[in-house]
Length: 569
Ligand SMILES: [Zn+2]
Ligand SMILES: [Zn+2]
Image (cartoon, rainbow, N blue to C red; front, side, top):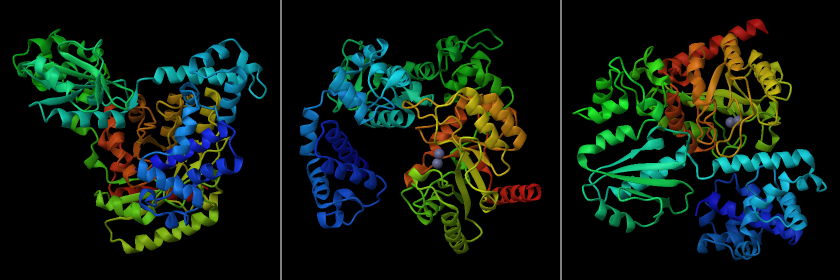
């Protein structure tokens, strides 16, 4: 059992106790423990009670509950609460903006215990009439319901890749060749079907083999003699496994790894890629492009005609790769809401072969995330100086900050404090509901600030969970070009923000992009792999990738920039 699994169970228990009006004091012990343990690096599953109670927010009773979870995989208290809660009421917690109190009111006063009834009540105007709700809450609930419906059956790219790899490894025990195709190979940021191709000359026995696999459930109505469709247990996304004989699999792999508009592209001969795929004697992907008279396009870019526009100006080997990255710039540590120390994060970066590690903890206004006031900034920088003194010339920690962009677009510190950083990532974290004009103006002001180096997660979106605030992307990118501000590709699979569709425009305006993992722990640093994938999808070149600069180039760049500001301010 991982820490986050344990914390989730504690959190849900606290939430359901509140929903069912249980003893307030007991309820709070669960909530406090969940809140505090969320950031803990202690190995919760393996600590005895007398060690657990030393952790902040953990009393004896919660410690015993943690032991129960670790030993049995569940919690009796929670099982009882779940038995009393209609599953539709639990679904209501997935609606953004609905806390326990509102869910309880909707359930108790209007008798709403499922999402369908919730939608009807909203459409009939009943929700607006409840005390404490009003028309705007009703509108938000309806919008969130619509968003939720659109997201149903989808997973983010990290989970989709995990499912695809798991299935491929399992299938390779039974078949000679298995290929991941479809949206996963295209590096789609949201995936509604995980697709694999299996080589077999005997689809009947292949189907029987699939029937014997553990953890998969077939949807027989959707399946056919050559296509197994169903799900992997526990994942709300369709899995599709298609059978092809050896002589067709290359051709089919190509056809299943490109969007339709891409397949319809024709070269000077008038032959489309799809026709070329069906008529080539040789069915390797390079041969198919050659036959159509088109340049070879990497799988992640096979969406539409964008790739060919791109290819008229660039070569495939210009695309950024993981090996091109020399460092990382947007990361958190235990100084704010990260789980590991600056030293441990830096050490891991060195292990990954990176030559610089940029720390950009939260700024003071982000108090919910342990944002640093000026004094703590100073202390952190002393720590970094000390750590840097221990490195040779081949590694360095840069002193950054993720400064909140305040409501009026200003940054979170005075100039004297801002001047102490090597660089500043400016991001919006609070008051996310804004009109397009308001959001754009707010970001423009932050971009104009002389100390802003990188614009962080420009829309604030959380994939499959929260739409970003609307912004005028062109105006933002143009302003970044004018003020020499780099735009982040937030590489967390939850964000992937700025959206890849805007990468080409940014590059054309001369705006560099930085693949920033926004890591809060060691594995988070590996999220840069998703950033590379999504960057390549948008045609990002090594030359326009900020953190592809070498240590020397990055040091010089940041140094020159600081000098320029000093002369200006
Ligand atoms: Zn942020
Ligand atoms: Zn961050």
